[in-house]
Length: 250
Ligand code: NAD
Image (cartoon, rainbow, N blue to C red):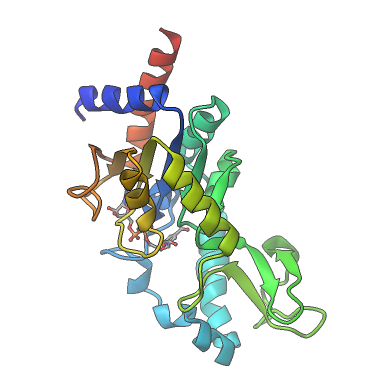
């Protein structure tokens, strides 16, 4: 990795008034959570139709079988990694105003981040579709297929399924954050999932510098990225944090 690029990115974060991170499935890959697409992607093992809202409503037991295995047994044991911790430390030190995440794995919060705008919801929260009572995943017996509320209503994970809209509050907070930041730090996203992928574009339109961390080029790289830091999220995060500490001390 070219150290001068790391220094340039670190100095932009140190000097900026507001840095916002935009994270995708790639930041959690080193926690053992695979992305959806690509060679080892989730959609090579599971049928994405399971996460279509209409399918879920018509076949809740069948849908819940996959949901339970994928999001609670498999994702559920994942631990935050150095890249999640890096963002939490940046926020604690006053260098990060918030994180817009496409992820539903709760790993930013587990690492200690406070301002997290969950564009696609969170798998650790569940909701009754009849009475709208909210639950923590740990409080619900997920062995029941499908899990039901005491009112008899069907319980659904509180992340968005295909065919559902973006949660209004997270959407509005994300738009605010993206349009007011002067540095947008994109980590581990292909930039293919809309409307989430519009957030870095929005930041760019409002004059932000776009720093991107990814093992491969994405839809952003040749179009809006100003500084491309190619590599694994944890490795680049370590390098960035070292430079930020050096810059902050001097
Ligand atoms: P994606 O699956 O489309 O792409 C992942 C990106 O991460 C790719 O660009 C890849 O090159 C990059 N990447 C892989 N390993 C990396 C690493 N170690 N360090 C840095 N980058 C790495 O991801 P997406 O753009 O976020 O879109 C997928 C959608 O699927 C999202 O909307 C998200 O909601 C959902 N999803 C979430 C999770 C999760 O919660 N952890 C997991 C899978 C999918």
